Length: 358
Image: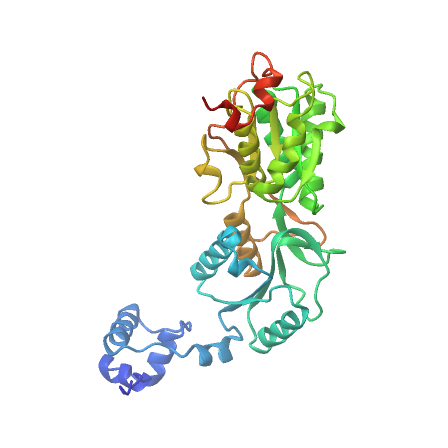
């Protein structure tokens, strides 16, 4: 077993030919009249002997631990939302901070213990994050400076950042309207999260501003999965020819995959016969479809960076009683085109893949 000997401040002093006090002042960036030439000699000596100041000692002196606590429900185990962590960690690293991540799996006991432990460690800041946009009850014990990431505290009182889902829904449907569509469906989720309501509000706003009547029959809901999307959209394909949608805005990309399947089994080609817009820009899903799916991107990375910068005071933004809305950009690919000249004939629409084989 190897014994590692840590370089001491006296080793640096001896190597640089200065006093221990001078080394301490230089390495801790204390203002003094030490010439820059001497300061550089001390830094060079420290690197040569492998010396690094004690973060514990520095924390006691500055009352800062250079650490941030990030409590999440499922983000750490979900690649879909991992970009939030990447944004937060990049911002922390640029500010010289280390992130302590606790994944609670939504367990309130683990959550409470995590808050207590991180507070005992005297972290410089704390972030409370969720996997998807929702309103949550703020757990007891959170510092007043805590920033909420991808969620909003019920009743306010904390700074928070969430995706602008209403504007995202508006942008999605505007893409379809701009392509010439007027019978546009909304494939919703039956889980009824906040994002569902906001995206539907954007859908309605886009139709209204285009002078298109909102047809309740064109809003259907299903599970937020490919199977759920297919099952829900199949019903819309059974509508009469003059009411069947020529385009669909899907609550998320996984449901859009189900729309692709349903359309292909009816002999419909995307985007020649049906245009599709998804939501999330989920990795390994949206860009991998045939044709690649036009979608609305959730700004996970930008939200994670914003939350960390606000928590550390790098960014002077954030209102305690209003969530910061992060833009959800349109990612244009190949699933949107003009509406078909005429709706496919019923026998083509209802023919199964097997029936179309010679």
